[in-house]
Length: 269
Image 1 (cartoon, rainbow, N blue to C red):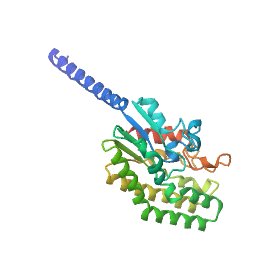
Image 2: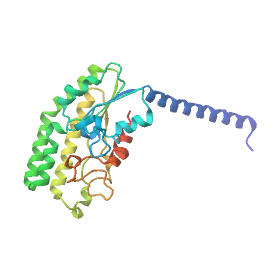
Image 3: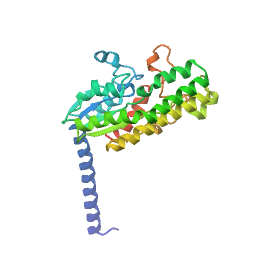
Image 4: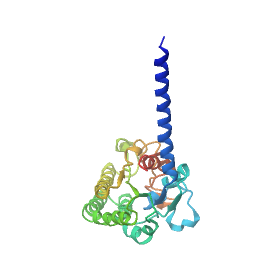
């Protein structure tokens, strides 16, 4: 039988541990509740593909299923400003979104860069034209990502830092679109097309990670979160070509926002 003093000592340690755990959890909840959160970016942040778009957002297609809204619903920050917009480029962030970031902003999220290298037109080329045309379009986009995108991203990250020098900035990236291991049994594009498109996503994501690090921003990588849920998987969290709503093509579904973007963002917010 355990001596009484030992039992009491262990009980005290357990109590202290429980109190400490609750204090840490409470601190995290309090931090989230006190957050002044601004969600910037393009269609991957506005929630295109996830449905339930708010009428007030117009062509920006902001969805109530977007990761930023899901995080806000769960954490009830003191303020939430949702200005991410479908089709946004780095220039659009600077001209139409950055004004929402102020000295009182404590948390910022953003996906940006894909539209700057014309990724939607690349996808259109790959869907409608030959493999050689697709490969050429991908190569051009990758070259632009390596040579021109860094400076454009720098301008955005620098502006965020200037507007809110003490904010936590979470920079999210883009998923690889295809599960190449299932490509041979998956109708649509050739495996060459799919391989090159995945590679292009990796190139863009690498540039984003490098530039975000220059400003001390937190890079949040969603690629592994989509593993097993890419196009060609039976439970894909990404739209393939959607003829009924072409803008939703190659964007996360509601499950992609809740199952990948939301938990990845939450773990860094």
